[in-house]
Image (cartoon, rainbow, N blue to C red; front, side, top):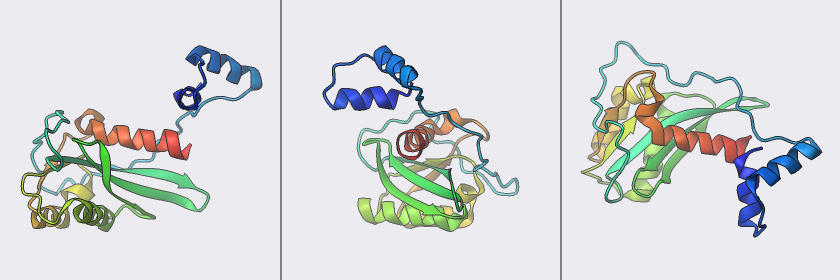
Length: 180
């Protein structure tokens, strides 16, 4: 039983327990989402210089535009794989920029930054933009684009989803609630 079914019923005003929803779903032969095989979206560039980890797993901010987190994820479609990049403001927990593409090149991430830039302001001097160690986020163009708006890049350790937990959580919600 997926928690989404129970939450949807509760939001609709039904006074129903989580276990009751699970029992009813089993009785009619339906089940919640099961996550499938992962597609590798973080491909580090061993030759690229990495930015320091300025966040240290503290995904909190006292005001908007102090900390943005970003990551890539994938969505399998009938026509192939679609890649999605989200940029999330850690203060409001809102998606401030996003982009969907059939590739995961740096241009996709730059487009998401542009959307965030136009929704949140052209100059953000106290902003830290945290990501994983994927080649898109260690690229020179990514660092230059952040510098244009006054932001500083931050990158967590390689292969550790906890170092980008907020962005990974948004990716998980996106897939569980909207895709699957």
